[in-house]
Length: 214
Image (cartoon, rainbow, N blue to C red; front, top):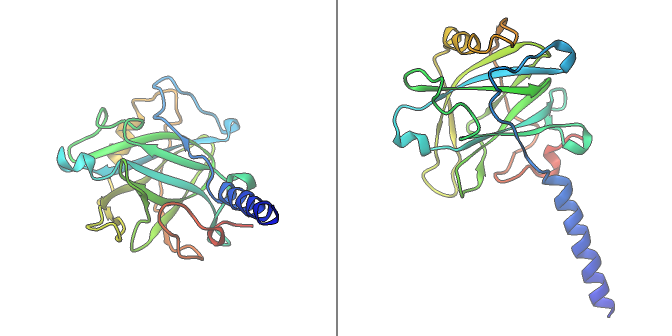
């Protein structure tokens, strides 16, 4: 009975540890055309371009996952500590309705703060860590922020990672998309994200404890 009790305690501890490092992802959908934002809402607008050159490439990635970032520590912030975990998933973003040519433009409303692109995912597969490094950016209240256009090259094997490439910036296209949302702030911040490594080696699937700010 003693071993059974010890085993139960260990199992409970493992479950608690898992809960602490695997928060539920919050899915954010593209904003409605009638969405209105003000600085007092403590929300801003994110516009990001995703390189999609053909119908086949539509399936090369299905989701990007953003985590709140402690810039000073270069660590992710767990939701229990006030952080946000936000998935932008194909089918929830604009998916070509407002795309131009070979780029899909994602327009999302997000809580203000610093974010880090932590993972890229494919349907029915794990979330992968962008390589060789990823980037951080800031969302300000009541402001629209364009952070550029990116291409994600899938791994060739299950042991690889997505490779991220920055492509040509198209702020005019981002501005044209924003203009279709007249109730939103029309001032566009053409922001260049900061390419940076975290203070830990982020693993695919979920961030380990040492990658979370205390």
